[in-house]
Length: 471
Image (cartoon, rainbow, N blue to C red; front, side, top):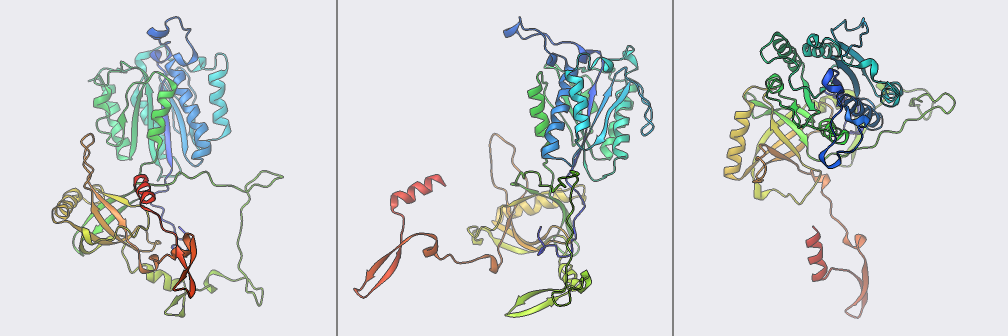
């Protein structure tokens, strides 16, 4: 967002797009059993990756190394349960056979070095081995600790996730008190919008014993297939760590009395490299830049209230102060505002402005949104019309005119997608005529034996067919 869209420095902080992930690793007895070699390589010696506990720690280690470059503002924590390691924690309290290996923090050198020492030092994981009394292990206590960590995390708007690693498909009996306690803790996490993903480190992991019913209420999470190698686990962690969140949760205003909720998604978004940071070469500290504006004639420092902006309207320069800009932006409500309908064949899709977005009904924002959204989409498909709307994502962004195109793609191998494509329509200033003489080459041709006229080079039929095939 540039200064033209956000002149007052206003930002939308409904969601800051960061992840807060807890690696919840089972440290019970089955996690330290060496897996047997495969049939194809039965003479192979067991390696460090043959221990499921080491596999889980290695995944956390590689995730931290990746995030320190790709997502330095995300937070990661590691919690062990079923371990004999104990350490009083004044911040979160004491939980039986549950140990906080690393608190929720941004990726840094110290946590990475700690995990590297655990993996590569002789006996590095010995102090974290399973508890002698396996009957005292409680998954509910581990989830309770995770809930406490999230509740005391500074940023309340992070996307909270729990990655559960285990190869024990029955940590307790299905109808025991521990099962009821775990269900209650998962319900509390669900209320706090925490996603739980189960990563079984066992090909023959039977989710029907405990976890299928246990994680049924967590609609944001999922149970993944079993994995036996670190590469498989890292591939699944990468997919689940990919940010697939809505850009905004907006209200669709049909009229003054009728509205429903939608989620706005960007189908295409760039994966930017980390921003460059300027450092002091002597202290290696981050250097902050400060901009001060002066009056060119008197050299006096100008306050923000003394600054004005201007725009050209009909050849005249119109001055606008901060209050004028704020009042202009408040003329349009945040969200979608329905203007009318237009036949789809009348829309000029060749006037491409930017990649299309996608909207899907949001039942959490307004109850009954799915029903009203479905009726609107069905009528638009039957009659061949597209709704025209004003879209304003935040209070600071400028409004855009958009057309909502019902999704008509039908793939027999995949379920049909339910929603509208948001096509951004250009304003008059966005449409410009090209001077083809400046874009392609030309040759001076004598016309009427009087003067030379530039003739633009044009493609022949074979070149056009080749371009069509490429497109």
